[in-house]
Image 1 (cartoon, rainbow, N blue to C red):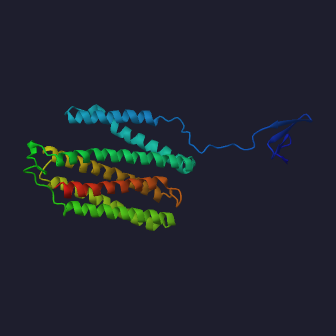
Image 2 (image 1 turned 90 degrees about the horizontal axis):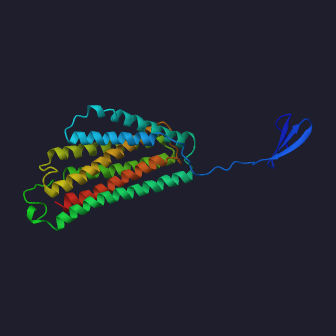
Image 3 (image 1 turned 180 degrees about the vertical axis):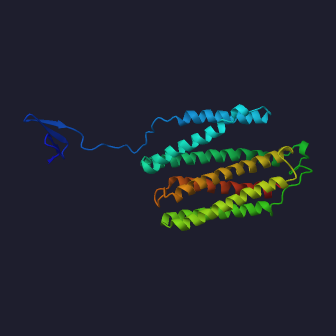
Length: 291
């Protein structure tokens, strides 16, 4: 027994002894509060607001495609950015400062991200399937050959090979940065991280210049459609992966990642490796075999 005040005593066995007017009363209570390893998220307005923002972005895209005035829809862009910032801020607070992202929560996030990568793989597989179908069973309209007659393909030994070297090097450098973070050397990790970001920017620049120099466009038959759909979709994923890496780099510089707790960075690195693997498939199938 230890005295808490002159009116009651607290027992380590899970009971409180109260004294009222010289009489003793015993009240039993739970000595420990059991905390669930799962995170029950508090009610948040961000999903509803984000849904409205995405509707506005979709409406803007439809108006832009159909050459309709969209002056009244510009509100969607700043509201989207503000909602995204607020939502991510809440997630960072829950994960970093409130400690809600337990090992069980991190396991769930990792599993969800793996399923997301599988869905992305199926998306690319569908377009690869279209490319293979068109190449292996060429129709009369394109000359019964592949590539179609009159189409000049890009040389795989120039910009595509350079881009391949850039992505492979960036994959190696981000892995090295992750290892240095796990070893506790934050500054070397930051240096190799910056090298990764530089390589990704160079890849995006080369891809843009390749599109500018190309002798065919997305409207030049099935080859142009498959080529620009696959490489353009991959380019959008590279841009998204670069944004994710920049976001994690800022958090790393703010010391929000430790050598043991950095699940967001791990998932961003996984995504970057996925982008790298997809590009290798593009390089060997589209640029070399398909040309």
